[in-house]
Length: 262
Image (cartoon, rainbow, N blue to C red; front, side, top):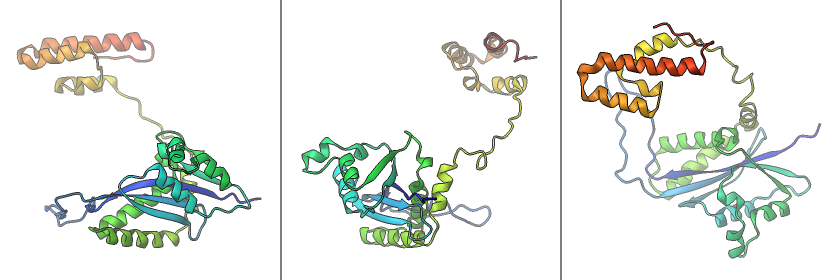
């Protein structure tokens, strides 16, 4: 059985004002964390990993500011992919990953032509699915390490990233790929039986407290809420009108399966 080597690529933003997002303190006391008044400069980390047990980080690059198509093109050109077999590269649908005209204007090959030259097949993930990219799991680890180091200069930021990547090289990154591929599997996320909703109890709780928009969002509902807030003496009458609207809508939608007893 031939072992297929997959690569995963993504970008992540950092700044020089990173601080830990949670901490510990004594009971009945708040956690106090000092942070600079300014966020500092922004940096972008481009990371490339592969599904192997040891030394899974193939290449990385830190760029000041946002990543542009030229930066992404140069990053791919620097990577030494194996030429004796096809390489599968997972990446999202960012514009710089489809750059064509921007690369031609600067005298570079388009991204897809560069991938063909490097014997690499670009596998674009589904839109808005970062949970399917194994590189995102590496970014979580790197970001946590940077927040603990609290780097305030570019040199310290690079040093913190190098330390985090050194720790990543000792981990089995093939488990990151397996986790993403089995994200929708029943073994990882079994379908739990949901409890039936007690619509009658839901109405009794939501309506008296004025949280009706979550049940029946419509223009009529907003009008009823306006009357409710203007004159509190009409609370009882408006409450009856709200129940009538909700009951009528639900009975028309599903009169057989939904039975409300209020």
